Amino acid sequence: MELGRIPAFEAHLDLARLPWRATKSPGVSWILVAPDEAAFRAALAAGGGEVVALIRMDPGCGYPPHRHLGDEEVLVLQGGYADELGEYRAGSWVRYPAGSSHAPVALGDAAAPSGPGNEVCVLFATARGGTLPL
Image (cartoon, rainbow, N blue to C red; front, side, top):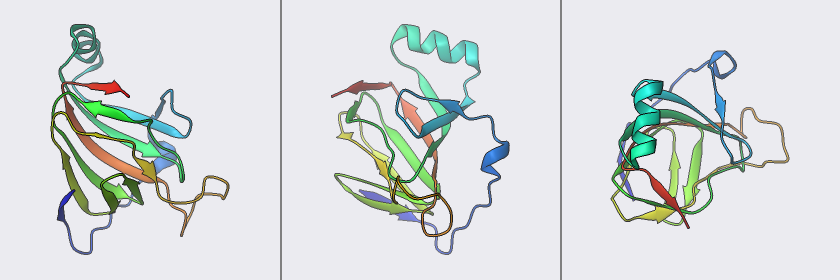
């Protein structure tokens, strides 16, 4: 499903300094980029909206299967992940159309410490309309 790739892409993020928020999925956290917190909560209450976020998945960790109610676009900033449709590494741009489903899991070994060769996966994602768990 990879639609694009930025050749020789590198991002240098100080992950420890970012204000990550835990999710219900172990080893997965995120940062809301837009909208602001109040607009995000209002959109959730209304059952939709658009969210732009940074997502962090520790090696071997990921989201449970879900279906997208609207389009989702993802740019892999660091590390990589795999799902039923393929494997995506830093610099990959992926688009999931409304109605598509997947269960992304960060590449690497959850039992080993993260670092070179077992990198944390960091995504810049825009999701429209929310998701439904499967």
